[in-house]
Image 1 (tube, rainbow, N blue to C red):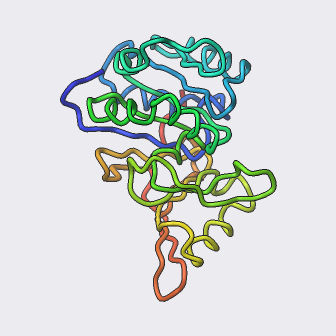
Image 2: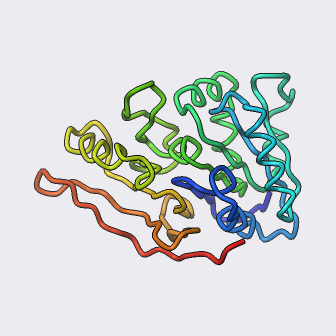
Amino acid sequence: MTVGRKPVIIALGGGGFSMEENLALDQYILDQTGSDRPRVCFVPTASGDAEGYIAKFYSAAARLSCEPSHLAFFKRTVSDLRSFVLAKDVIYVGGGNTRSLLAVWRDWGLDEILYDAWQSGVILAGVSAGAISWFENGVTDSVEGDLLSLGCLGFLPGSCCPHYDGEADRRPTYHDLLLARKISPGLALDDGAAAHFEGKELKRIISSRDEAKGYSLTIEDNSVRETPLETEVLDET
C-alpha cells in the first residue's frame, strides 16, 4: 500500500492473465505501484472461487515480480478482512457473475473495505465483472441468456461495458440500454483494452492488442454517440 497516492482503479474489458499469454496489462498494473515486488491479492468471487482460475493467477504471477495471494469466500475466509486488504498494494478482481460477486461482498462488508483501501492508496483492478463492479452500473451477463444493466459499487461515475468487441451482443445491447435510459452514459472496453482512472478521472486507455480500444458513449439528440478514445498499445510481456 502506498499512502498519499491518488486513488487508482484499472478496469480491463477483457484480457490480462484471464484471457492472454501476453501479460502486458498485468505488468502495467504492477508498475503503477512503484514497488519492485508489489503485494497482489486476486479476488475470484465472481467465479465462485474457481480453483482453476486461482491456479491460473498463481501461474501468471510466477512470471511477474510480485507477492501473490488470493481472497476466498467459499471456503474458510480470513478473520480480519480489513487488515488483510489494506496490507496489499493491488486488489485484482476476476471475471464471472457480477451480481453474485456484489451480493457476497456486501454480506461480508468487503465493499466498504475496498472503498477505504482505494482511498488509502491500494490499487483496485479487475477484468470483466471485476471491471464493471467499480462503476455506477454496467452491462452484465449475470442472468443466463440476457445482457442487462446492473447497479454496481459506484466508486467511478457512469457505466462500463466490457468485451465490447469480443462478444457480438455487447455493442448493440449497450446502445439499446442507453437509448432506453436503463444505463448511464459511460465507457466501453474491447478485450485487451483497459482504462486507468486516477480518482474519478480517466487518465488513459492502454491495450495489449493493436486493435483493442476504449470508447466513450453518450446520448445526443436521442441517439448514441460512440467516440473512440486515444489508446496506448503496451509492449508485449
